[in-house]
Image 1: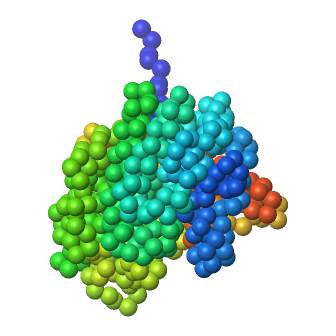
Image 2: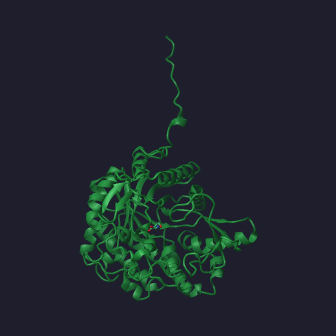
Image 3: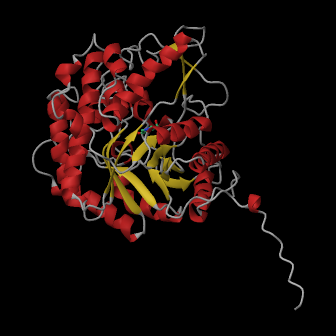
Length: 482
Ligand code: IFM
């Protein structure tokens, strides 16, 4: 027998970190931020049309009237997604396109837009992921009381049923709400989002009715969709860190956790509203009257995946050293009922153009903590990304090394969290395109694709090419632009 050939062992540390087969590589957008065409196809006005047209509410008086014109350019945008190697596209459905007043029969013209979009995605081999509500409440429902009114949750259930019946044959992954914390507490608490109300009690009622709407939505989706369909909700759970280990700072963190996180995860995943939240806010709402028999069961209906949106951690304290912002930080009114005397600090280190500290360890902690608290519940990162001051070169390229570094750092954190037991099924970059960044208008660019708003020309940034490399190889590429 001859000598065995010498085999050089593969140095596995040279290989880029791989993700499991079937991991979703997506990008996300939201209807009002990208579609434009606000007066086309019979669409009714939403609270964001009203709010953005109110002087002083949005930087520069920007509105979503045209946005990125995705309504007309979706074919071009789907072609871009295909070039980027995306497996999935998370978009939201505009409620006032489907029901212009938020009630009554569906407008076929509105549904047709989403039929065309999903057909185009499927033809490109891209999984459509539909969110039913990303903040564009029909104005008429706001006039009838908005989210602080229980009837809005019932209307949402009817809307969910209409959409599921129309698109259930082609959409297999559904989200009910995006970031209900923002809808409730920025919309009705600090008032920096539509509809711009500043009433802490109304904000808490809104939170309950958003939870109830989610429950009604899950029931409607389950009733109309095949049993294989997956249902989720996207929460922006705050990754809260006390400034010091003092009892007072830990108490500050507890209060923010109660009204920022557990007000949603409590009823959605753990059977009801936590006692400490009820106690913190007892002067504002009568929880016994607000939560009716049957609500807990409706809200707690099982979901298939939990969607998490993460951007930055929050550093909080009980007392105010020089540079801290009170919990009123987002406007003159607090978005944190029951925690108004908590102070927010800028975490050390680099920040994005939003002023948000860059800290991938927050995403690692969020994933591992959420996984530990909810064994058996798969997770999906439905948003993560960063705004930077992107400027095209004279030859029309956009170099955004900071975004590549941000995405690389956060995806490395996801990979590490998965190695440590978090069952993460996919990652959606926020955002596919630069778009209307709510009260900041068009000044903040989160896209992997640059949009020249004067011409609507799309320019994939260097980060888009980098993300495509990672998506296509299903393995985290080094943070260099090619
Ligand atoms: O643009 C928003 C999105 O609509 C919801 N999540 C956060 C993003 C960045 O602020």
